[in-house]
Image 1 (cartoon, rainbow, N blue to C red):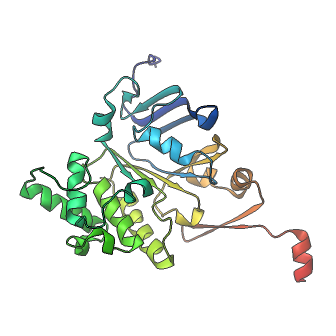
Image 2: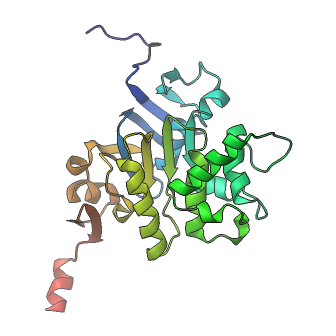
Image 3: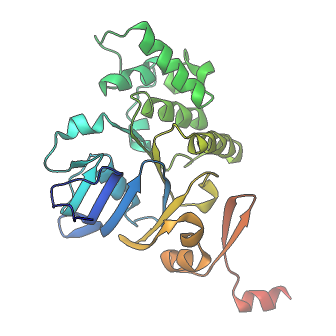
Length: 280
């Protein structure tokens, strides 16, 4: 099979990073990372605070140019493509976006305005089909009953689901979820994960990348995993092969015990021998 040239994209890959790094001044935020995501894959990116997860996601969302390396997103090479046009093909749900939404924004309009990549209704004109699609997106995450509510009246869990609905409004080819369960209580987390599981198992859903700190926030249906630590890749590949106690211990710098129950993961710090003896 012939090797593709530097400027030729692999049509089977939605994300194709080769030795990608991102720096701020002298600070290396993430990298070098070599990583690829195919159409039918559902990826989890996990690691401690400061591991570079969000920085990597911002490159995948076409919000940042890599400082070094080669990055293709949806077959387009970053640095040689209109980034604003590329962003319209990528769905992104993040806490940074949540903080920018006005409290008086009507939920239906918040989802609808994703079509123009804006926050807040202004002079855009929408057709009935757009309104119907916004309701469909809300329904897909169990939030259609929130359509006429204002954003400021929503619980944290409701906000998360609405933002995911917004991220899907443009029928993206790639959906990026940055810590979607952060800040939720147990009930809210489990409700959201059930919706994400449905999305992951839907063969018509876009490729998914979910960033989290916690293995408990990984829904069933995800296929691949990348573990980051201090900006570098600890391991990446199929989820059952990568998400191990050994890799988590290496990433988090302490001994981790990992358990799997009914397709869900649970982690805790291993007790030291001295603590075990005291308990006895």
